[in-house]
Amino acid sequence: MSEQLNLLDPVRTTDRLFFALFPDPDTAGQIAALAAQLRDRHGLTGRPLSPERFHITLAHLGDYAGLPADLVAKARQAGDRVSSPSFRPHFDRVGSFSGRSGNRPFVLQSSESETPVTAFQRVLAQAMMGTGLGRKAGPYLPHVTLLYDDAMIATHPVAPIAWTAGEFVLVHSLLGQTKHVILDRWPLGS
Image (cartoon, rainbow, N blue to C red; front, side, top):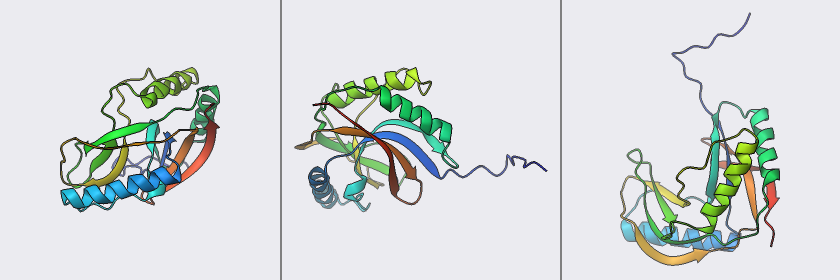
């Protein structure tokens, strides 16, 4: 007897797949200190993300009920196609993104519209297209989410934070568990 899909009972997504850049531990510590300072300054109540979860999402590959093996294989093929020198992500302002009430991302951003991260993201998007995993890169705003809160904080400058990105990774996020599992890594040349 085959299982039928119940359209009144939506499938619960449990897994997310994405490409990302993670800061080194020292930079993650700087970001955590900034998040705590800004949380106090703006009277935010959302809890800052833990330092090991700070990252820049390069490409979101979707949310699923179980992680599709064919998608992971295509993502790995795309990662294998990328060749890029290392580069320095840098951020010098913070502000809130609009979102659901109580769940608005408060993020670290760059004041520049074209950054090394946006250039790298276009390279990755081309590699993804070559494996059937995506479409032409559209608007993209590199950011690091610091916390989620109800408040809308206007964008304002902060002391710059930068690091050298020596690799990019494929991440399996276990939704609702605040856990990231690195599935693969690709070094960036010097």
